Length: 210
Image 1 (cartoon, one colour):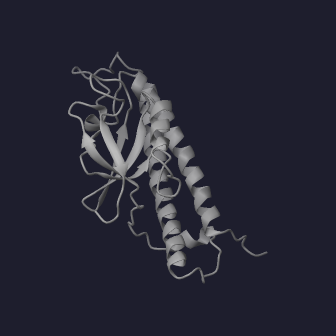
Image 2 (cartoon, rainbow, N blue to C red):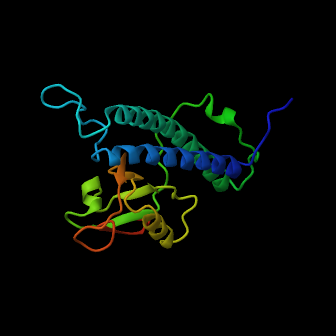
């Protein structure tokens, strides 16, 4: 029996759907950390005397941290497959579409992993001091390649970002950012603060010529 063939686009869209599900699960376990005194991934679970902290559910936090680490590793592997798929689509497009329109899971089975970032689609052109974006580690001129479920393959207009922010208020949103040819991951939490908006930053459509 032959290996089922899929269009490159369908294959990548399927991977992106899996990525979205992973992100939702990461956010779900992130909420467990949030309700446990907003503890992070590396803060101590014992007090100064070496006893389990009584301000958090230590078991819940340990379980959530383990799940987040596992899911983030799965997400990184999946992102590499997505990047490879997008590279194949772009290569075919550049060559006039003469290559075979098939793309199977075997494409990523024997490939050497190359750290090729996704194409940025928006850029940070302002960060307010003391705002959620600054607290998350976002900087001026960061090129965003992922904003939650948005990336270059499904971004159409700025209102999509506004919709995510509105519906994910007080929830952690994973951002993948290109900064000085390196990829960084941040968790941004849209929330009210003493400034304008929920992010404390502004983004504009990315221009590749910059």
